[in-house]
Length: 288
Ligand code: GLU
Image (cartoon, rainbow, N blue to C red; front, top):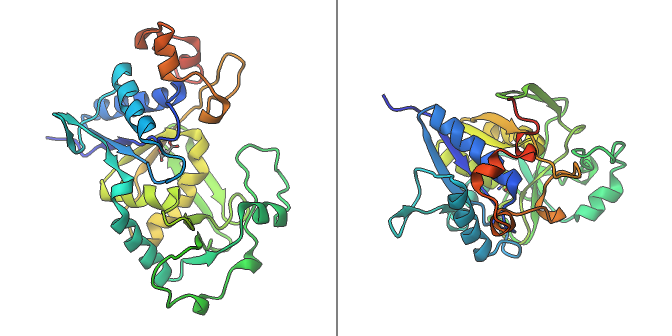
């Protein structure tokens, strides 16, 4: 009997992948293998300015070198290539229209800076806390219900009042985030004409029938946001498994922006995938 497990790895090609990505994708691959399921590769290449084809190609090459493999995708020269979000625009527009017609989202022309300035975020020092979009800036529903396309506006999801989003993470257990306190009205569409991450990922995970999402712990709040989108779009939500974040030697979390060691640099420095998987950095935060 074939397993119903369907997982995915979904890098954003805005830079070369680092060891933290490799570890998350490795865990995703192992979980798919253990469940006898399928793993899909999806290139999250929606940001027209920051995503570059060389990073998309680099990610595939580096992950293959590292030993990751996946089981589904368009045929590229006899191997499975990634699905590309940039080729799936129509699905995203349909989701935008449903959310707009049912009053879940509204246009917004405030910048991130405006929001940060207006919201007196009390816990700005805490890593995952964001400034909350002021409710008084929401336009009345009848101001935009006839709009036929997203246009050159950002669109935000109108969070419900007094609602706690709860889910059972398969590694962390019970998680709970309070709407309008832990997170505010979030972006679903960007004024440069592409869906925001939260919307694109939900539409694609549902369309690809993903049963379990494996991703870094830094995206826990995103999972809460995404559960609201699954509900509004009447789609089945997957299970979640959030992986611990990997730190460098100095104890700093690895991220593209802090120029951490990339798989590419590690390879050129003579490390083998196996030695990297035995390294102290790799094992930190994982169960023995
Ligand atoms: N593309 C996202 C990133 O690279 C991850 C998406 C996800 O796993 O949901 O951060």
